[in-house]
Image 1 (cartoon, one colour):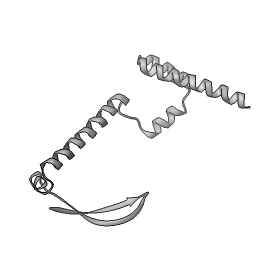
Image 2 (cartoon, one colour):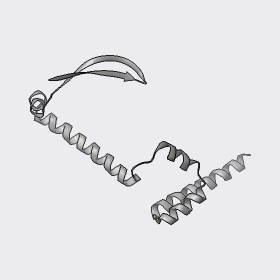
Image 3 (tube, one colour):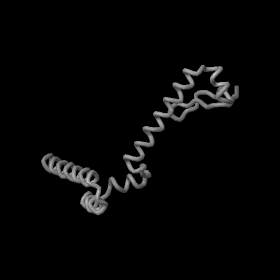
Image 4 (tube, one colour):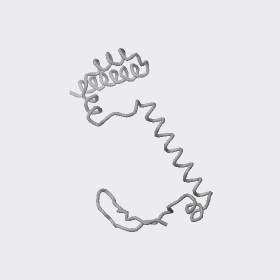
Length: 113
């Protein structure tokens, strides 16, 4: 077994530093944990990686926080023009929905005043 020090944290505060032991090889892992547990962990990790990869594909790989902040503050009409230029029907529909929500929010704010 191989051992390394790990730090246990909660909300940024260090709770404990402790030793963590784990198998160095697959063969040792099979002996220690058994083939069923090793396979279950493999299957679980494989599913997580599949979902992460699929999420990146569906969302375009994600964007940086600075880009997200810029897009949130951007003029929805300009975003609609960009979406139309890209030619992505789903993106156009999402931006139009955003424009509709923005219009509805503005009308609601005007009624409150």
